[in-house]
Amino acid sequence: MKWLVSPLILSVCTFAVVHVVDAAPASAKPAAAAPVKKQETFKTFTGKVLANKVRMRVKPDVESHIIRQFNKNDLLLVVAEKGDFYAVQPPKEMKAYVFRSYVLDNVVEASRVNVRLEPHIDAPIIAQLQAGDKVDGQVCTMNHKWLEITPPADAKFYISKEFITQVGGPDYLVMMQKRKAQAEESLSKAFFTAECECKKPYEEMSILEPTEQLQTIVRNFSDFPEVTKQAKEGLALLKDSYLQKKIAFLESKAELSASAKEEMLAKHKTETSEFFTEAAPSPRATTWGKRAIQKDMTDQMRLWDTVEESLFLSWNAFHTNKTLDDFYTEQKANATVIFGTVEPYNHPVKNKPGDFVLRGDDTPVAYLYSTRVNLHEHVGKKVSLLVTSRPNNHFAFPAYYVLSVE
Image (cartoon, rainbow, N blue to C red; front, side):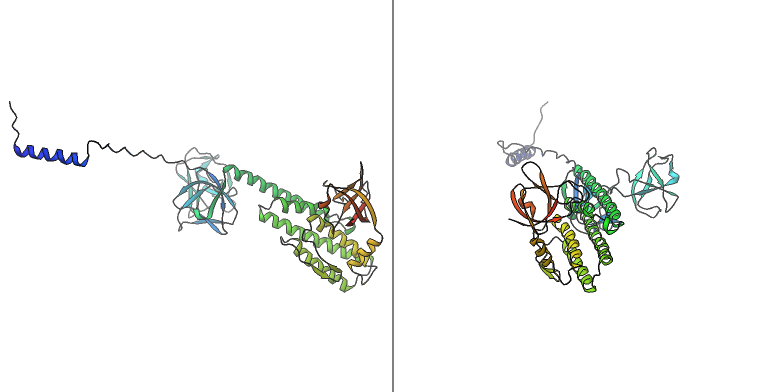
């Protein structure tokens, strides 16, 4: 049987072949199929808040319920992203609430049990629990029908990406939380020590130990501004308590004029404000004597400045109308020259008579401190010192105040 092909059909087929050949020449290679792009897994990181009053919301939406606000430098664990928002893990101290009727012996008895932000049915839902899930909670004190629990692991909240920057991996947050706990513990111990000293009479007070503890917190935990702020306030209160007891003590031993008392309080107020600011103190003149405060004065030197002030006030009680310069002029007239190598004395002992030791050929010769000479600059050097005697608090060697390095 022969197949008959009409001229019209042949013409159409020929046109189709020519059209295909023009569209895809024989020399052209077929386009490669586009590779399927795998969705990258989000890498959890520690995020730092970049501004104050940054809002954390229940959902990634600017109209969503606001849970709380964070301040600049607060740290959070960022676990995911959604649009213009980062999903963050609930803060460590945060609590959530579930209706007690659905929990028996710390086990959830129903499916899709809502976990809410507050202990009432109108509060935002932040997660759900399923039958068999275990919870560890306690009866809510505000509403006994609810159980207070830690938010479930899958609970997430949202912060706009523009207010978060990455500062490290997830371990960084754990490390910083431990450091903060250490800072708060150190602050608590320092406050306890300071409180104990402030309860003592002036003659028995020793503010060196609590002052060193609080200054160490300021130096070592600058990454926690709230903690260092409390430490600075504690230092100011400690110094104020010491001054008030000192005034009362001096008044009981010798008559202190009203003008001298006012000047002492004014001087203390100025020093306290300058002592705890980061900017270098400016030179000032008082009736105690015109004295330029060194810009490079260390915290230890400022501490001994309080001790020197106490000695001056005791001397001034019997030398009326005399200045601080007069005090040190008399000290220089009776000064002694000693020789040796300056070494730091960093042992945190109570009532230590100096921050430095002067060592002879083999053994220590004396304890040293100064508010006029930065002895740090002379550590390890053999020097000749002009000194005046100070109480050694029953330590092994005599103690001296350094007036100058010869």
